[in-house]
Each structure stands twice: as C-alpha cells, then as structure tokens.
Length: 479
Image 1 (cartoon, helix red, strand yellow):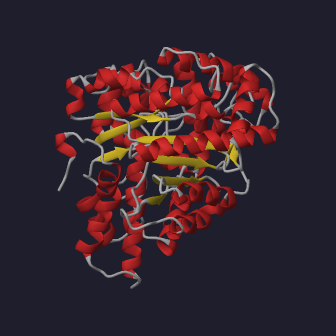
Image 2: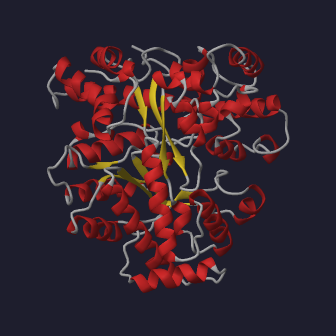
C-alpha cells in the first residue's frame, strides 16, 4: 500500500488507528497559538493582502534562505522584483526542497488556505498565484479571516514593553473578539541590550514616552518596566518571552546593575562581564514580575543571530542569517531557575531549546524544579524554528516522553510571522497521531482508542487551555 502523500487527507497517517486518532480527536480541536510574531495591527484591522506574495513570502526568512541556496538573486527575496516574479522564483525553488520541511509545509499551507492539491513548481505558478489572489480578494480572506478559517481561538503576539497595544485594545472591543482572542506577550529583549548603547538609548526614550516619565537611571528602568507589565496585564497579557543565547544568572550587585546601565545609557560601551551582570539583574527582576502576576515566562534559548555582517548591514536583522548556537546552557539555566525557586517565586516556565543536542538537557532540567503545585509547571517548549519538522518534533517528543510526562505537554506553537503558519499545528497533530498509533501497533502502548484519543485532545488543545488560563471565545472553551 502506498503511503498517503502531502496532498492527501491522510498525509502522515499510515495506519487505520492513526487516521481515527487524527480525524476523530485532533482535527477539529481549536488552536491556541500562544507564541507567534504576527502583526496585531493586521489582525485588528483584518488586513487584506495585495497578493499571495505579501501574505506568504514577504515575511518568511526560511523561504529566502532556501531561495538563496537555490541560486536565486536577492532581488527576488527581499528586493524590488514584482510580486509574481518573486512568487515564480519561489515556485521554481519548491521542487528543489524535497526532504526539507519547506516542501511539506508549503503544500499544507496552500491546501489548507486555498484548497490547492497541485504541486507548486514553475508550470503551476501562474495558476496558483492567480487563483489564490482571487480568493484573497474575497470576503473571509483577510488576516483575521485566515486565522478563523484555521480554527484559531487565541493568538498571542510578541510585543515590546514600549508598544502602545492600541491594536489589542481595539480588537478586544470589536465583535471579532467573540470568535478570536488577541493577546500581547511581554517581550523585553531591548531592556537587556546594553552592548549596543545607541539603540539602547533610543529604546529608553520610547519606554519613557510610554509611561510619561524619564528613564535615565536603573531604578527608573525597573519602575517603567513594572508599569508596562501592569498595563500589559490589564490588556489580557499572561505571558512574557525572552529571546536569549542563554539564561543569564551571573552573580551581581545592585551597584553592578546601576553602573552598567549608567554607562550604556550615556553611550559608553560596557564590557562583556558588566553586560552579563546587568542582564542577570534585569532578567531576575522581570521573572519576579511574572511570578507576582501569575504569568507564564518563556525562554527561547540557543539562537545565534545575524551571523552575516554584510547581509545585516544591507538587509537588517531577522532576514534569514541566523543559525543554531552551541553555548553552554545547563549551568546558567539551573542557576537562573534555582535563584527564583529558593525565593518561592518561580513562575510557570516554558523552556525552548534550539540546539537538538539540548533536548535531554532541558527535559531533565524541568524535573529539578517541578513542585507539585500544578501539572506541568515547567514545560519543554515545542520544537521551534529549525526543529519544527518531522525529525525535530519526534526527537522533542521522545525526550519529553522518556524524561518527563508527555501527557502534560501544552502542545505546538507557530513562532512565525506568517498567517498561513497555523498549518504547523496540523503538521504536529498528524505526526503525533502517527507516532502514538505506531507505538500501539508495536505493543508499546495500549491499543485503546479512547485512551490515546484523550491524550491527543490534551496535547492538541486542552492542556494549553488549562495551563495558560486565557479567557477563551465562547465557542472554544470545550468540556
């Protein structure tokens, strides 16, 4: 029997039990996308995309990486080529992505959003481009409509403390909030960036404007962050997020933190040691705020960003020149968590590793600080970025299953800027059902459909619902 392919309804579901688990338990569950980089403005305004290129290619560095590797010139990635020229260049690249997750994800996205079951290549590019653009011009195909069509009940965006949150507020007051909740996530990475005094000083001005006060001292910084944390909470925020190479947990004094802030805020470079102590101080203070308000703190660890100096100078950050880093993670992470645990102020925490070698490291780290207060208080975050593909998801699930409790996992997140990336939830759910069914066929799990089906529902939706405690739309609260 031929295995179902990417265009089939049973893609990845090679056994009868896998098909029953997916179609009977996973497929119709709502989506809680608790970590994304979507635009809150585009969601609040139900932004209409001018073309499939704007929707699909203009904000996807992973596709640009593949195109460059395929010999496509930069003007077709981030440059001045027309929308169709860029799309046609991507279409020529897709057949070259066999065994890369982009092949699966691209076709899942086209199928789920537009009903396309045809391979994307140079021959099909014009037809797919034109018919997708016709759909995008029709009712129900704006930014918000695309999320609702994908059964997204909650989407959380990544927001700087200085952001106004005006679009979150506007959406919450609109009728659209009855079917789709939009919440901010407190992402204070700029508060730690003392190695770049110029941008740091500019950000302090923005932060000061957001609270209507000057931010010229370390103590004023902490006061401003607390004020913005409180305002985020009022708008429904229940998560923070940090994008770090590693957790910061160096020994420091208040004098150390004030000294480094003073130098950076006046445009004076700080040493690596001074920066490390400052970051450790600020990260700890932010963690205390999260605990005080009952939030979940997320730490995305291990990315080595903006490696290509030439590209960074011409294209800027987040344009496809990041990679997996190989810094030590276990020791500083243990120190960070332990400092909070000793004070009884360790919030619910999700740890994401980008280097696959750290799956087991992070999975065992969780068990050091589980305290029995709530199920799965510390979480091994979903396979992320370079790891959100079949092998990465499988290795993540295996590590969590062997060294923790898979049954308490809060499930997938897109971590994307694309409104079509919600197909990653489908990709994960299909893969999960296939794994569980295969284990049951091998006798490693009971061949008990209700038992396995309940696990599938938990990992697809119910665990996230219970863990994050969002106010959900009425049609997505479940049993």
